[in-house]
Length: 477
Ligand code: SF4
Image (tube, rainbow, N blue to C red; front, top):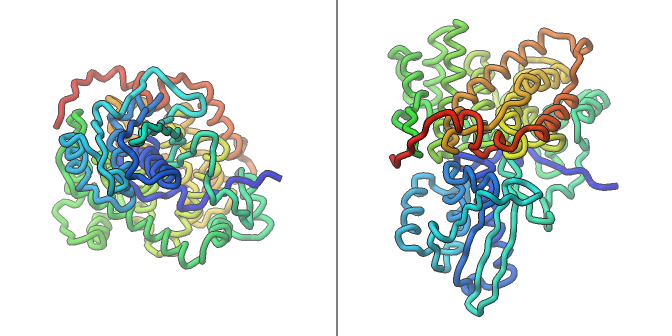
C-alpha cells in the first residue's frame, strides 16, 4: 500500500520572511537544500562559480517577489526563520557591490547577481511553473546542477522527488486525505477536529512540544500584526503604496493609548462592539500583517505568505471581540485550520502559480472559517461546512499582482478573505449540515478543476488582470 503523504501543522504554518512563500521562502529553502546536497558530494571550498536559473512564474514575478534575494541568502547558508530581516538589504547590497558571495557562510566565490541569476521568462519546466536550477563549477572544471520546484506555501520538491519529505514516511494514527476521511475519524472516535490533528501530531513529537510550537507560531503572527499596525510609511518596490494599517489603528483608537500588544487589545476592546468598528479592526489586522509581508518582514505562511493575514486577522478577531484569549482555544483554532490546509494541498494546490489566488486567499479563508467554527462550538460537520462555504465564494479568483509585487491586490485581498471566513463560520453555525448540497471534498475538486481550466496569465505571472490594467512606472524607493 502506498503510504499517504503526512503533513504536519508545522509544514502548513512556517515562520519565514515575506513577501511570498512560493517565490521567496521556497527558493530560499531550495538554495539551502542545494548547499546540503553539494556538501555531501564535495567540499564547498572546491566551488569556483555558481549560477541560478529561474523558470516560469519564478522568472516572471521573481523580481517583485524577492526570489533573487532569497536564493542569494540561501546560498549564503542563512535560514529564513532566523535571519535578521533588517540585514536583508545591507547583505544583498554587499553581494551586488563586491560581486562575491560567501557560500554556506564560509567560502567566497565570484557571484554577480545581475548576471548569475537568470530570469528565463519564456521557459517553464513541465512539472511545475515554479522551477529553479542551481549550477556550480568546481575549480577542476567539473560542473553540477540540481533542479527544485517551489510548489506553494513554502513546500519544495527536488526534481524527480529524490529524497522527498522524510515526514511523508510516517504513518499517522488517523490518515487523512480528504474531508470525508477526517469526518470518518471524528465520528469513529468522538474527537473534535483539533483533537484528531493533535493525535496525529503526537506521532512526530510530544504533545507539550506541539503546543509550545503552535503558540510560538501564534506569537510570531501576533508580533507581525502588531508591527504592521504600528508602522507607517511607504512599501518598498517602487509602486509607492502607502501603508494603511497604522493610520487605521490610530483612527479607530481615538486617542486611547497602549504600551504593548496586550494593552493594545484592551484599548481596542474599550471601543465597543459596533459592527462597523469590528469590521474595521478585522481589516486593520489583515492589512498590518500583509504590509509587513510586503516589506520583507517576518511572517508565518498561512498557508502562504501572500495570504498570511487572513488567519491572524480572524484569530485576533476571536481573541479580542469574542474573548478567545486562552492558549487552548488558540491551539485548537490553528490545528483545525492546518488540517483544512492539508486537505486542500492534497486534493488541489496551495500554489497560485498552479491555481491562481483561490489557492492562496481562498484556502486561507477556508482554514480560518473552520478554525473559528471549531472555537465557537460548532460541530465537526459545521467546521467543514464553514471551510466549504469560504472556498465556494473564492472559486475562480485569479492571481494578478500589479508589477509582480505582493501588494495590489494582495494586501486588501486578505481583508476580504478574513471577512468571508467570519461570514462562512456564522453561516455554518446557523445551518444544518444535513441540508448542505456541497461538501468540502466537492469544493476541493471544483477548485482543482478550476485551476486546471484557468488561463496561465492569471497564475502568478503578472501577465493578466489588474497587473496589465494598472499603469505602472516603477521607480526605486
Ligand atoms: S493575487 Fe493572491 S495569489 Fe497572487 S500574489 Fe497576490 S495574494 Fe498571492
